[in-house]
Image 1 (cartoon, helix red, strand yellow):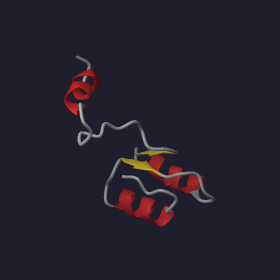
Image 2 (spheres, rainbow, N blue to C red):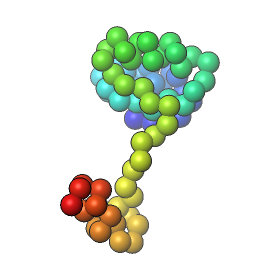
Image 3 (cartoon, rainbow, N blue to C red):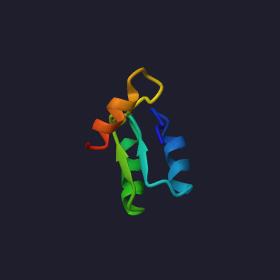
Image 4 (tube, helix red, strand yellow):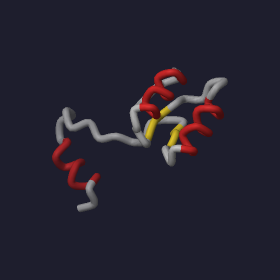
Length: 68
């Protein structure tokens, strides 16, 4: 879940059991990351690459994205 810079939203996501969140660096990032680690969750500083299936030609990119 992408929480942008909202640490409260990130903590809510962790309470709900999500194991992967995106939280852009801000003052309480380290605290949220500690809490996440204690729950075996991952906190990313930026969203990972994504594939937009609404774009023209997405079917070709999807095959490449999936490795073949």
